Length: 191
Length: 355
Image (cartoon, rainbow over all chains, first blue to last red; front, side, top):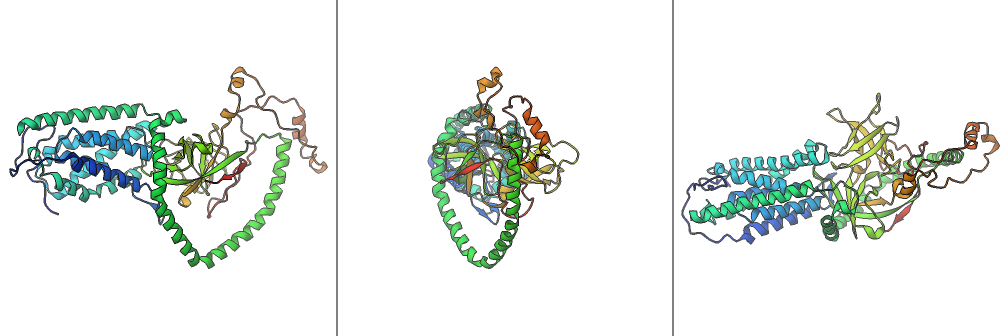
C-alpha cells in the first residue's frame, strides 16, 4: 500500500481551513462502525493477549492497541464521541492490567489531542511519513504513561520494557492504516 | 458544510478536555498502593470478579495445548530426565542425613533460646488466568479469592520462589502484584552477608536492590531472601540471586522466572501487627503473647556448651517484643544456581488446599 493521504487531512482542532480533495456527497459515518466496533476488537484482542502463555521463555506481546485507534480516529475526523470511547478503553486497560486508574485514559487522550491538533500538518503525507507520525504518537502515549508511572510509583520504569512495548505497538501501523483508509473518505466535510 | 464543521470541532474539543479532566481526577485519586479492599476499589474488584472466569475460559485451550505438548515432550526426554533425577536423588540422600541432624540441633537451640518462631501459615493453591506484563504494571489474576480466606497482603509463591503479594481480592479472584511491578517494594536480605535491601520493581524482569549498605554487601550469585522486616512477608522466602546490571545497579534475578507461573500458592500469612492486640501495644502492656513453654532439661552432653544460654534463661527476662523477629535464621540457603530450587521456608506451612 503506497497511497498517501495527500491533500485530504485538513480541519484539525486548531484549523479553520479545508485543504481540498475531490467533492463527494456526504455519507453518514456510523459511529458503531468506525468507533465502537474497532474499540471492541481492540479490547477483545488485548484481553486475549493477557493469556498467561510462554513460548520458549517469552510471553505474548503486550501492545497498547488503543494508541492506534487514537491516531486513526483523530485523523479521520473530529468527534465528540471518540474521546469518550478512548476514556472507556483506557479504563479497561487500567482494570485489566492492574495499573493506576486514569493512567492509560490520560495517556491515550494526550496522544489523541496531539494528533487532532497536528492534523493539518499530516495532510499530503505518504504512507511512510504517516507511519512516522504514528510512531511519534506512540512515543507521546507511552512517554506519558512512563511519566505518570514515575510520578505515581516514584520509580522510573525499565526503559527496555517501555521500548519493547513501544516497538510492538508501532509495528501495528498496517492495521491502523487500514482503518484510516476505510473511513477517511466517508465524510468529505472533514477532509 | 463549513457551518457544521465548527460546532463538531468545538464539541470534540470540549469532549476531549472533559474526558482528560475525568482521567486526571481518577489518576490523582488512585489508591492502588494502599493495602486493603478499600484501596483496591469497588471497580477493580468488580472487574476482577468478571475477568477471572472469562480469563479461565480463554486460557483453557492454552493450558490443554501446553499439557499435550508436555505429555509428548516427556517421552522425548525420558532417558535424560531419568539420569538427571537419579543424580539428584543421590545428592538428596546425602542431604537428608544432614537435614535431620541440623533439625535436631536447631530445635535444641530454639528451646534453649526460647525462640519464638513465626506462627504456622496455611497455603491455598490457585491458577493464573490473566497476565499483565507491561512496564507500567505487572500483575496477574489468580482464580481464588475471599472464599479461600485470601486477603490483601498475603505473599504469593510459585514452586521456585516468591512471586509477589495479593494487592486486591474479591470472591473467586485475587490480583497479584508481582515483584517486578513499579509499585512493589519488598524488604529482602542477602543471605551470605545478612545485608538488608528493598527490592524495588521497575517493570523490567530484574527488580532493583535499593538501599543496599555496607562494604561489598553482595556478590554475583548471592541468594536473596525476604527479610521479614515490616511484617508483610515472613522471613526466609526465596526470592532470587543477586546480579549486577549494565547500569551498575544491583538487581535480583528472580527464581520465579525459571518457569511459567501457571499455578501459584497463596500463603495465608498474617503479619504480626494483625495478630497482636493493638490496644495492648498502645497502652504499653508488656506481654502480648504468652511465652513458649520452658524447654526440657538439656542432655548432659549439651550442658557445657549451653551454660551461657541457660544462665540467660534463668535471669528475669523482659517481656518479649511483639515486633521483633527471631535472632537466629532458620531460613534455608538456597543454592544460587541449579534447577527447581527446593523451597524450605522458615515459616511452618500447613499444606496447600486444592484450588
